[in-house]
Image 1 (cartoon, chains in turn purple, yellow):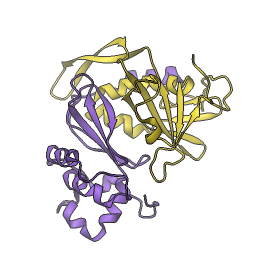
Image 2 (cartoon, one colour):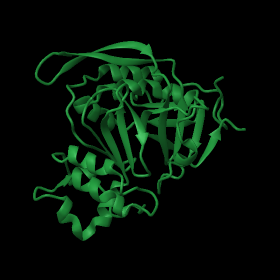
Image 3 (spheres, chains in turn blue, red):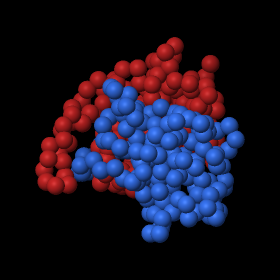
Image 4 (cartoon, helix red, strand yellow):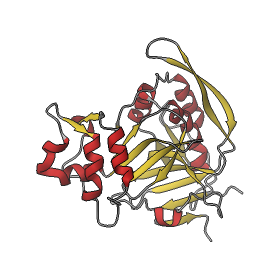
Length: 139
Length: 161
């Protein structure tokens, strides 16, 4: 089956890199890359991981975890993170995430959240794509 | 030295219901990628993450370390398989084919130094869903462990001390 995985990968035709958020329903995390360069992951805290360029260590992307919990927590403040077209603004998610995370799991004072929010300010993801289940257990 | 994870029979890949390109099985344990993940990477990239999936089967077959508990609610039973591949397929050039498509030129090169390849899985039903895979900086004193593993994971499952 490993060979079949290889065969499958060889059938893929990767397109030119384009920044686009991806929500993993299985992992309840959202990834966003600013660049398609080779990278490694560095865990910032329980809810944020950044991807750094393999050589220069420049931040080239991030992974925000616990998105379902975050959206539920925001609840009636939804208008602040969802624009009129039903799109979730990644920058707002990043700025608010540390404040809704379970106590001790995130470092709200870390400038990395602000920096990433600034870099991702034009990024949006359709809320329907998040497919957040209302019955999913909270973080 | 490569050691099998606890409770495992000697690993072998098995056929599962014919051709099923994004699933593979280690004896009785079925590991699977969600196709949407790979399709997203195909469409948007980074392409390198597609080629790094080729390291996943060996990571779960021949893990150097397995940690349980991903320090997140709902993922306390998640597992992290750590491996030290010797080589990897690296995208070294993207040749423009048309406005959207690049041809990825790849080479098999040595794996990055001082990095551990980590595969995160979660048991869903009777199958292990591969949540993510990534390189992490290795611990200076324990090269086959990711940095700060003791705080990032619940406990070390393998090897058994």
